[in-house]
Image (cartoon, rainbow, N blue to C red):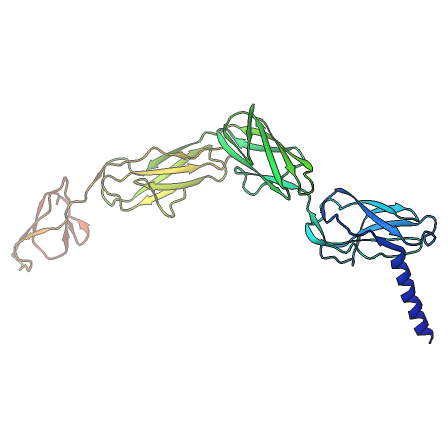
Length: 368
């Protein structure tokens, strides 16, 4: 019986509380923006119920209407009906299911919520990106940024704005003015400042919010570099003669990069200071592009190397006579036309055998 009575008294108490404190209806402030000043009007059903020093506190739910972890957004010290000034905190996540309620302190009472969902638009925000430094993000309305670029560079800055109904962009740089969310600086040669004033209009009655951007650009002079290619053989050569090319770079830094080219096309895998070619043909041209690891260096291309290359002569030996010899037989070998000759027997030079023909008197492998 005691438990039933306690439950009855608890229900009566909750009913009394609901009747003594409630939010005025209809609740019409259903659109809010972060930090906007609003008023929550409420009515006290019994002017003698709340005690001196009582504080009415407005509490905000999460975006799904749950008061599991309510946020206090405004308060009023009073014992009678009135209105509580409140505002959605800055950086409140955007959402369409917020609710609001009132709690009192003396005695403790929790009102019903406002009865309708409140839509909250997040605080206008934005950032700027740079084409010169991909991945870098400069937050608007924070600090004064600095940037470094190489002389002669062109850079595009892009402003990205969120949570606004509209935005106006005013860029000021190097004595020039432009609009739009992008700003491109061409052929930068002097260190100067870049400013952008972003005027935005939020979704709550057209409030104007300024998101300034400030950047000081420091220009670094270009570093000249040079690359020289030296072949291991300078004179005329026959086709397919192995030649080693050596690249030497000035102002290359600690880790310069190389790319060898043959007849204007990059040679796959040829990326060191040395390049060996075993298949050079008449008309082939070799060059190397060097890229310094120093800041603000410019890739440099070597002077093309075009060696004098002769086609390899036909080395077919003409045999005059039978190839099977008896002890007293001889055979004349005729070398193809060339500028000089050297006959060999079994891979060894034959002393004095330097004419286009050679008389063979014994068996073996002859070459010229």
